[in-house]
Amino acid sequence: MAPIQNSAVVFAEIPSGYPEAGKHIKYVKDRTIDLDTVDTQGGIVTKNLVVSVDPYMRGRMRSAEKKSYSPPFELNQPLTNFFVGKVVKTDNSKFNIGQYVYGFGGYEEYTVHAKPQADLLRILSDEELHLGLPLTTWVGAAGMPGQTAYHGFYHIGEPKKGETIFITGASGAVGQIVGQLAKREGLKVIGSAGSDDKVKWLQTELHFDHAFNYKTANVKAELAKFDPLNIYFDNVGGDQLEAALDAAASYARFVECGMISQYNEPDSHGVRNLMQIVAKRLKLQGFIILDKAKDPSFQQEFYSKVPKWIASGELKIKEDVTKGLEKAPEALVGIFQGKNFGKAVIQIADN
Image (cartoon, rainbow, N blue to C red; front, side, top):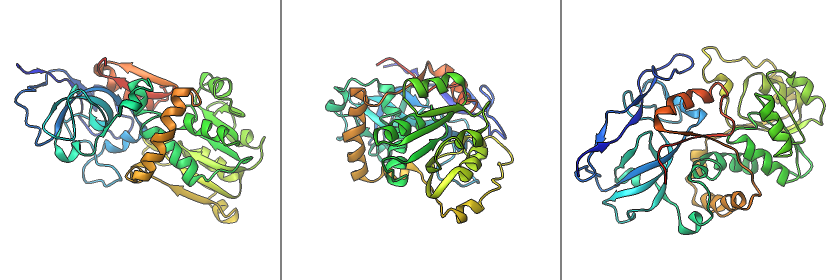
């Protein structure tokens, strides 16, 4: 077989503020792969079908000298993130051609996974595929963002019926799931989002008890309308974190999942009321879902419940799907500007 096209989105330059499509993140068309001769090093080759777009990727756009919880992207190499692909070549007895796998892959048409990387991939079972979920959902509500929401809410938030929770970034990939889990457990749910359309969706479709546009509303005034917060699920940080500290009940739990408002700022927002942590005996806990995802018992717990809840309609999801790898740079930059409505996903190829 002659070499075939293997276009990709590569990390071209380290940004100092907001990344720019075409400058820091570039689509490269003139790449090829020969499936007959490529060395898998005991692994597999996947045809990549969908790939996730997530806020944490901004933290990987850095130099190798700067340490963090996730590795930096390599300059002039394809971006990597959670994906679903189809096995098209295998030199590994664990995999068969035609199987669908989930895990870490490239922003490219085909990825070679050497044995150490291939062994970390999760094969989607026939039972899971028969649920009929779109493949995009397996990198969203049934993937890493769903696991983030589930673990953060249940294991760190420790919810109790009748409590009040405030979720920032509530229409996003994680926030929309947290809100529905909270309603399921009998909590009063307050959410913030960045547009009136997103607020309307939270109230009419997900039945939040209250939602508001943080760009036009006074956050402290909105929170003052309700009982003190028992749980704060933080996806945004900044002044909303500050407002939540003032609105918190004694012994409230702060689930620190992300701070997208700070990812592109050279100077971080200075939270001025940290004494509330002491005065109210608050518990603030940050977490990285990759730590929990290594636990087989958590994997079993999550995958035995959440995909079925989605398939049955118990959990509603909203996805923002961009078709075509060439449009991925704009989609990735867009999530830092709030342009996505729901879980952002790139559809690289049809199933």
